[in-house]
Length: 173
Image (tube, rainbow, N blue to C red; front, side, top):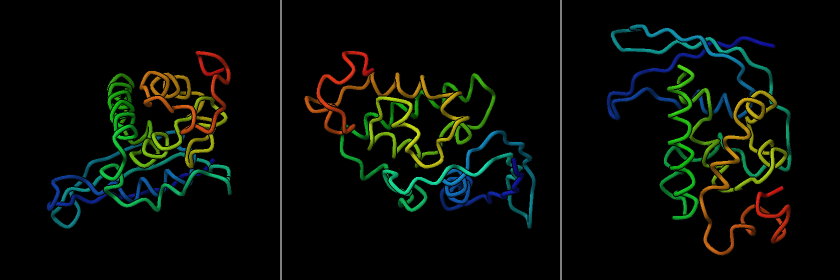
């Protein structure tokens, strides 16, 4: 287990904190816990994060390196993938509110984009998403898979997940 400190700076052009460094970090690490502190640095708000983590297992066959996705990648998703992304976003925000944690600790935007693209049906497939390690699988895996299963993908949803048609029956195995 390791500790890393990140500082997210306020970006006045978008009226939000720049989460890109955090998303890149989460893509390569299994985040266990986050301690946060809001402060003012050089006259601008900053969010200091102390992250307890372990390195995520390297997977050369991962769908794609989500840290390399453009910042607005969700806007480039096809309609079916965007629908799943938005459902995952609603789930993540509800879960974060219940847990009293920032949403990015649950899943980053780029991790949700990767899930929307891959449409995993099993925890094993979900674990192929970079940054989704044992902790995220144990804490959120069943819920994420339930969201994926609840959002229809036209008539060819099985093709997107790489599964055989009818594999595992109606519950996805």
